[in-house]
Image (cartoon, rainbow, N blue to C red):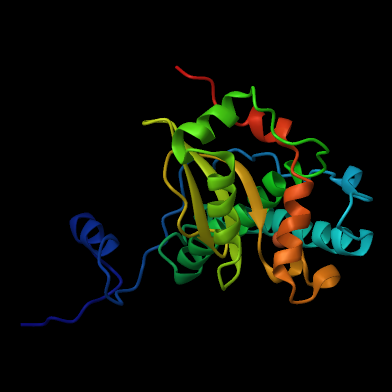
Length: 233
Ligand SMILES: [Fe+2]
């Protein structure tokens, strides 16, 4: 019996090969109708933050450039994925690696927007706000929540600290996020986002991470954070 495999297969075998994880030659299958073009992501201008206490213009300007890089790469990855799909190369390792990388670049973009978006404030969280009362219900006191949030920020490693709101039970959770894409609670809403990658503070604070955390806390834009809290259903 001849068991050799050729590139010429019947339609039934082609379906089997499409789901096969072995090294059979993949047959390109361009889509009958190419997907329409989508608008590119644009970087948000956070220039109004230049001059806030505790953050030098050099640090912030460099951080904005890093953020712009994530936006550029999200657009690049999406375009490259689309090109491979249009060419029928969706079974290629290149397509798979672009898919794997997109979560890192996309969250790098979005988390920086949330981070810069919750900076530049001048006043503490209002004790009359729904968020303040949600913190009291979850943690017993504002200081308890702050201790948990800041302790998470002092953890070794690089990543993010995010106060999340889980709408199902209406609970608040301070989460540690490895890099950009790991450990996000599905379905939860990011309320307060703090960057603890070294680029966020080393220009001004070198290894004094604790002082950076204090400077960040003093510049939290609490009204912006409160706006992210969904209304109760
Ligand atoms: Fe950053």
